[in-house]
Image (cartoon, rainbow, N blue to C red; front, side, top):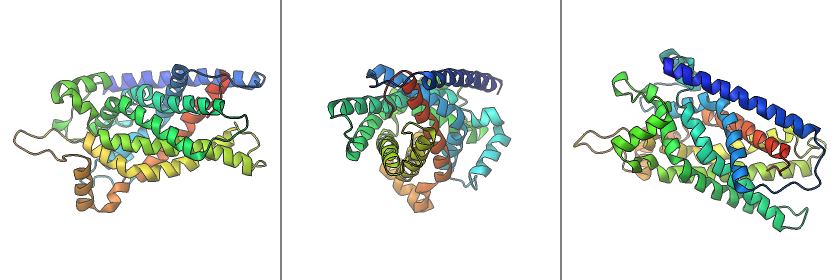
Length: 339
């Protein structure tokens, strides 16, 4: 617990530092004169900006991710609702050790999955806009395609950290004698590779890639399209195309769509990734994505696929808002085009 408290304290200090950097950057953006034409950012720069924005969102929203994972892997009916889950997690493990367990994996995920997902999308968006006549809108289907492409690439790059995040988030729910007690994300990934094989770092790859493809397509594509449509149709309400009210509204709409589309895959992914190693002579709990889907629906009904929907949305909405607004504002501060 002391180790977790120490790591969590470092995490909070790091987030405060990130907020300070963001505040300076946003202040510079507000003071700087508007550029006639935004600069073209290269792919590494876009990926770094995406990772920084994602870290800001994760620092605030990680407790909701812990609650979501523990509810989705809860086959014994331990938790009645998200609030009940939060109270029981804190009672069992404390606030920091309970709700911020796995934060190191969440940060690593932002530098793998998050940087690719947002960075590649923003980079492709730049390229497509540059290839068109000025003022020409990018078709919605192209935005969805770019979002799905960046999400698929990012999910493959970030899958080891995703597996570690699920394991570490769900570990405190296990009986004491069954807990893995990972100290940090590096030890988690190292132990999985050593004890279960390197390929187990890509366990649940199919549902993860499908989920990330749908999620990124919905979040990023809908975010960009909604911003344009709201600004064009309701100029009195949203006069500034880069204003916080417009960004906030666009992320809320995109989050509803994304959660509805991705939650069933999220439930299956969490269960496959958190599946315990079978005892010698016993069959694995699930043979794969399809088997997990069938067994879960058969045992618990179709609504099990939307278990954790509320914490998923409550986590995704503020995370999407914080991460995309941070990324957009940092991009603008550096003279680049927003999303």
